[in-house]
Image 1 (cartoon, rainbow, N blue to C red):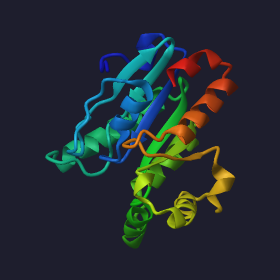
Image 2: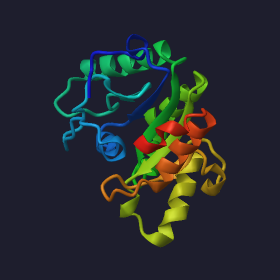
Image 3: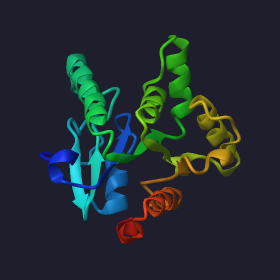
Length: 209
Protein backbone atom coordinates (compact mmCIF):
# COMPACT_ATOMS: atom_id res chain seq x y z
CA UNK A 1 0.00 0.00 0.00
CA UNK A 2 1.22 3.46 -0.82
CA UNK A 3 1.52 5.98 1.99
CA UNK A 4 2.32 9.17 0.09
CA UNK A 5 -0.98 10.23 -1.48
CA UNK A 6 -4.00 11.70 0.20
CA UNK A 7 -7.48 11.44 -1.26
CA UNK A 8 -7.22 14.97 -2.60
CA UNK A 9 -3.83 14.37 -4.25
CA UNK A 10 -4.90 11.12 -5.87
CA UNK A 11 -7.82 12.65 -7.73
CA UNK A 12 -10.10 9.86 -6.51
CA UNK A 13 -13.88 10.13 -6.51
CA UNK A 14 -14.36 8.62 -3.09
CA UNK A 15 -12.58 6.93 -0.22
CA UNK A 16 -13.29 4.12 2.22
CA UNK A 17 -11.38 4.24 5.49
CA UNK A 18 -10.77 1.39 7.91
CA UNK A 19 -10.28 2.43 11.53
CA UNK A 20 -10.02 0.56 14.81
CA UNK A 21 -8.18 -0.14 18.02
CA UNK A 22 -4.67 -1.55 17.64
CA UNK A 23 -4.51 -5.30 17.04
CA UNK A 24 -8.18 -5.90 16.15
CA UNK A 25 -7.15 -7.49 12.84
CA UNK A 26 -7.72 -4.45 10.62
CA UNK A 27 -4.77 -4.97 8.29
CA UNK A 28 -5.49 -8.70 8.03
CA UNK A 29 -9.09 -7.84 7.13
CA UNK A 30 -7.93 -5.49 4.35
CA UNK A 31 -5.66 -8.18 2.98
CA UNK A 32 -8.55 -10.65 2.92
CA UNK A 33 -10.95 -8.13 1.38
CA UNK A 34 -8.84 -6.53 -1.30
CA UNK A 35 -5.63 -8.53 -1.42
CA UNK A 36 -3.93 -5.33 -0.33
CA UNK A 37 -0.30 -5.68 0.60
CA UNK A 38 -0.36 -4.07 4.03
CA UNK A 39 2.00 -4.68 6.90
CA UNK A 40 0.56 -7.31 9.20
CA UNK A 41 2.00 -8.17 12.58
CA UNK A 42 1.04 -9.45 16.02
CA UNK A 43 2.60 -6.43 17.70
CA UNK A 44 -0.02 -3.70 18.18
CA UNK A 45 0.71 -0.42 16.44
CA UNK A 46 2.57 -1.66 13.35
CA UNK A 47 0.72 0.91 11.23
CA UNK A 48 1.67 4.43 12.37
CA UNK A 49 0.41 6.49 9.43
CA UNK A 50 -2.43 6.13 6.89
CA UNK A 51 -1.69 3.51 4.23
CA UNK A 52 -3.45 3.81 0.88
CA UNK A 53 -4.39 1.49 -1.97
CA UNK A 54 -6.20 2.73 -5.06
CA UNK A 55 -8.60 0.58 -7.10
CA UNK A 56 -10.02 2.39 -10.12
CA UNK A 57 -11.14 5.74 -8.63
CA UNK A 58 -11.68 4.28 -5.16
CA UNK A 59 -9.12 4.99 -2.43
CA UNK A 60 -8.90 2.44 0.39
CA UNK A 61 -7.20 3.77 3.51
CA UNK A 62 -5.93 1.81 6.51
CA UNK A 63 -5.78 4.26 9.40
CA UNK A 64 -3.29 3.79 12.27
CA UNK A 65 -4.64 1.70 15.13
CA UNK A 66 -5.62 3.78 18.14
CA UNK A 67 -5.18 2.85 21.78
CA UNK A 68 -2.26 0.79 23.08
CA UNK A 69 0.74 0.52 20.73
CA UNK A 70 3.59 -1.73 21.78
CA UNK A 71 6.93 0.06 21.98
CA UNK A 72 5.38 3.45 21.15
CA UNK A 73 5.60 6.23 23.73
CA UNK A 74 2.38 7.84 25.03
CA UNK A 75 3.20 11.17 23.37
CA UNK A 76 3.60 9.44 20.00
CA UNK A 77 0.28 7.65 20.54
CA UNK A 78 -1.42 11.01 21.13
CA UNK A 79 0.13 12.40 17.94
CA UNK A 80 -1.11 9.40 15.96
CA UNK A 81 -4.65 9.87 17.37
CA UNK A 82 -4.58 13.60 16.57
CA UNK A 83 -3.36 12.94 13.03
CA UNK A 84 -6.11 10.36 12.52
CA UNK A 85 -8.80 12.84 13.59
CA UNK A 86 -7.32 15.60 11.40
CA UNK A 87 -7.05 13.30 8.40
CA UNK A 88 -10.71 12.33 8.70
CA UNK A 89 -11.80 15.96 9.15
CA UNK A 90 -9.69 17.15 6.21
CA UNK A 91 -10.99 14.43 3.87
CA UNK A 92 -14.55 14.05 5.21
CA UNK A 93 -16.13 15.16 1.92
CA UNK A 94 -14.32 12.45 -0.04
CA UNK A 95 -14.71 9.73 2.60
CA UNK A 96 -18.01 8.11 1.67
CA UNK A 97 -17.71 5.16 4.03
CA UNK A 98 -15.96 4.27 7.26
CA UNK A 99 -15.46 0.73 8.54
CA UNK A 100 -14.82 0.61 12.29
CA UNK A 101 -13.21 -2.74 13.10
CA UNK A 102 -13.68 -4.00 16.65
CA UNK A 103 -12.68 -7.12 18.57
CA UNK A 104 -16.20 -8.55 18.91
CA UNK A 105 -15.69 -10.89 21.90
CA UNK A 106 -13.68 -8.33 23.89
CA UNK A 107 -15.68 -5.22 22.99
CA UNK A 108 -18.27 -5.16 25.84
CA UNK A 109 -15.56 -5.65 28.49
CA UNK A 110 -13.34 -2.96 26.92
CA UNK A 111 -16.22 -0.46 26.88
CA UNK A 112 -17.24 -1.31 30.46
CA UNK A 113 -13.66 -0.88 31.64
CA UNK A 114 -13.49 2.64 30.21
CA UNK A 115 -16.97 3.45 31.53
CA UNK A 116 -15.90 2.43 35.03
CA UNK A 117 -13.23 5.17 34.85
CA UNK A 118 -15.87 7.68 33.72
CA UNK A 119 -14.13 7.92 30.35
CA UNK A 120 -15.68 7.60 26.89
CA UNK A 121 -14.35 4.39 25.28
CA UNK A 122 -12.25 5.36 22.27
CA UNK A 123 -14.09 2.93 19.95
CA UNK A 124 -17.44 4.50 20.85
CA UNK A 125 -15.93 7.97 20.55
CA UNK A 126 -14.65 7.15 17.04
CA UNK A 127 -18.03 5.71 15.99
CA UNK A 128 -19.80 8.87 17.16
CA UNK A 129 -17.14 11.11 15.58
CA UNK A 130 -17.38 9.47 12.15
CA UNK A 131 -21.15 9.83 12.12
CA UNK A 132 -20.91 13.38 13.44
CA UNK A 133 -18.79 14.46 10.45
CA UNK A 134 -21.30 12.79 8.12
CA UNK A 135 -19.46 9.57 7.27
CA UNK A 136 -21.65 6.48 6.80
CA UNK A 137 -20.11 3.93 9.19
CA UNK A 138 -20.15 0.12 9.30
CA UNK A 139 -19.10 -1.82 12.42
CA UNK A 140 -17.03 -4.88 11.50
CA UNK A 141 -17.24 -7.10 14.61
CA UNK A 142 -14.14 -9.25 14.06
CA UNK A 143 -12.98 -12.49 15.74
CA UNK A 144 -16.54 -13.83 15.99
CA UNK A 145 -15.17 -17.34 15.33
CA UNK A 146 -14.19 -17.33 19.02
CA UNK A 147 -17.83 -17.02 20.12
CA UNK A 148 -20.01 -20.05 20.91
CA UNK A 149 -23.19 -20.33 18.85
CA UNK A 150 -25.53 -19.82 21.81
CA UNK A 151 -23.60 -16.69 22.86
CA UNK A 152 -23.49 -15.14 19.37
CA UNK A 153 -26.70 -13.08 19.36
CA UNK A 154 -26.47 -12.01 23.03
CA UNK A 155 -22.92 -10.72 22.41
CA UNK A 156 -23.99 -8.78 19.32
CA UNK A 157 -26.88 -7.32 21.33
CA UNK A 158 -24.35 -6.12 23.92
CA UNK A 159 -22.15 -4.62 21.20
CA UNK A 160 -25.12 -2.74 19.73
CA UNK A 161 -26.17 -1.43 23.15
CA UNK A 162 -22.70 -0.10 23.95
CA UNK A 163 -22.62 1.74 20.64
CA UNK A 164 -25.90 3.42 21.55
CA UNK A 165 -27.94 1.25 19.17
CA UNK A 166 -31.06 -0.19 20.77
CA UNK A 167 -30.98 -4.05 20.71
CA UNK A 168 -31.74 -6.48 19.20
CA UNK A 169 -28.73 -6.19 16.95
CA UNK A 170 -30.72 -7.61 14.02
CA UNK A 171 -32.33 -4.16 13.75
CA UNK A 172 -28.89 -2.86 12.83
CA UNK A 173 -27.75 -5.43 10.25
CA UNK A 174 -27.20 -2.52 7.85
CA UNK A 175 -24.55 -1.24 10.29
CA UNK A 176 -23.17 -4.26 12.21
CA UNK A 177 -21.33 -7.00 10.31
CA UNK A 178 -20.12 -10.02 12.35
CA UNK A 179 -16.97 -11.40 10.69
CA UNK A 180 -13.84 -13.49 11.15
CA UNK A 181 -10.92 -12.20 9.09
CA UNK A 182 -8.74 -15.08 10.32
CA UNK A 183 -11.23 -17.67 8.99
CA UNK A 184 -11.95 -15.67 5.83
CA UNK A 185 -15.61 -15.30 6.84
CA UNK A 186 -16.38 -11.81 5.54
CA UNK A 187 -19.78 -12.47 3.98
CA UNK A 188 -21.69 -9.99 6.15
CA UNK A 189 -19.19 -7.17 5.58
CA UNK A 190 -18.90 -7.79 1.84
CA UNK A 191 -22.70 -7.66 1.62
CA UNK A 192 -22.84 -4.28 3.35
CA UNK A 193 -19.97 -2.88 1.26
CA UNK A 194 -21.74 -3.94 -1.92
CA UNK A 195 -25.01 -2.43 -0.67
CA UNK A 196 -23.23 0.90 -0.15
CA UNK A 197 -21.51 0.72 -3.55
CA UNK A 198 -24.86 -0.05 -5.18
CA UNK A 199 -26.39 2.99 -3.48
CA UNK A 200 -23.54 5.05 -4.96
CA UNK A 201 -24.33 3.53 -8.39
CA UNK A 202 -20.91 1.88 -8.40
CA UNK A 203 -21.78 -1.75 -9.13
CA UNK A 204 -18.68 -1.74 -11.36
CA UNK A 205 -16.57 -2.05 -8.21
CA UNK A 206 -18.27 -5.24 -7.02
CA UNK A 207 -15.54 -7.32 -8.68
CA UNK A 208 -12.97 -5.85 -6.26
CA UNK A 209 -14.95 -6.66 -3.09
